Length: 515
Image (tube, rainbow, N blue to C red; front, side):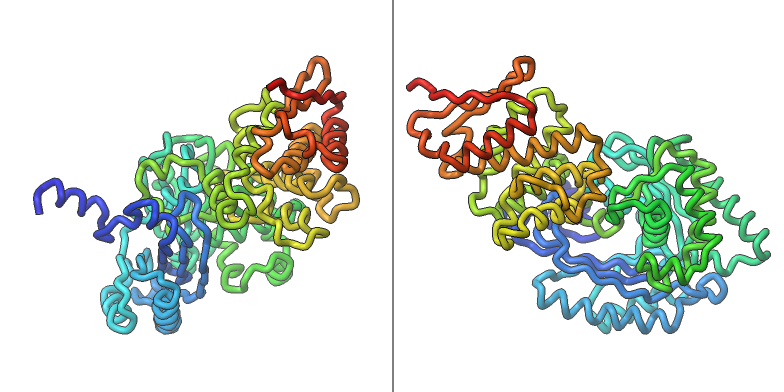
């Protein structure tokens, strides 16, 4: 092997292979990843190595490998048994799914335990899987790359908490910068001596050391890990937040601190029941909350955001070519959905071109959401006609989509609802509409009705058969029909055009384009 070939091979370590050799591989391969953590063991199979991959399979077993590690120096015997059982199951499932070979990583518990190497050898012997035991800074890097999968160009600090460790990583200009690791996982903190005072002093010392590696007052603190997600879900419960999607959920420091106080004042079993949090996870929340309280006090982030993407997604991002990384995850996910589910794949782009004159002054960020809605506009056609609008709304607000703020989910959901239904009054989603301003709600309605009208020209494409022209100052919406397209502008199309104009608050004109 020549030197350049050697360098190329090493660039893909520890896997020794790129996963994405070409468009066919990106479209068809199922990529399996297993994360052996201190608290849980999880397997994820990504369906298609796309920029925003779908989760074909996702299963977690709360094993507690790191329980008692700080006191004994060894992995939990019960945790070992449960982890090995889970890994045997995952190995067999991966074979059946065509997701082999699995990429397996192990974090703090296995790297710190005296019997970690022996357990790694046992896993390989019993399952055929080959765990890669990573150090804390590598764990921080991969978690940060997971955040980049959902937030291209993210800026701030990523904080990933596991059972036995907590990592920080700086994100700047879409790149991972400074990194640090600490023994601040809740399972390790259980073994800290000195009672409450000793624990508080230990947390303060470790947080200060870790935070010193990061820039002060970052624009955003990205929280990765099950304990953080449990706290965020409790924040939603306290606030009465209407949308329970954790990914991209935002909190202020004030709100977070109020929630940590609220958790301390309430019965954990009652809170667990109200939020669907497991008992194993809820048991770790008080310790994790104590760490988070100190962390935000020291870092002073301007905003706190939750990322459901972490180390597993980071492993996927690790092997993506630069060209694929640069793509917009939202647009790519919507393109994939259109190709897989729409009656006329490719029509979404033409529909976007058709409706765009109404939104001529829209910012690039808004146009991105309009484009995503147009790509998704016909992906629910198999649903019962009476419920298509609901399926569309649920899809936009609940789907696993990256790069989408919560208000943008609702905006897109309202638009897709109006793609299939003229009126939204009495909808079971009304509590979510309150997440939009009146102007945003009206704009989403206009987008939906524009898509509903544009779909009337779906024999070729609305941009070929007809053209919309919007004159905001004159308050006029003009439809220009191509020769031969007049029959398509029938009774139903005219009614939809009138409904669009009413929502837009304009008069209408219709004329025929000269040959």
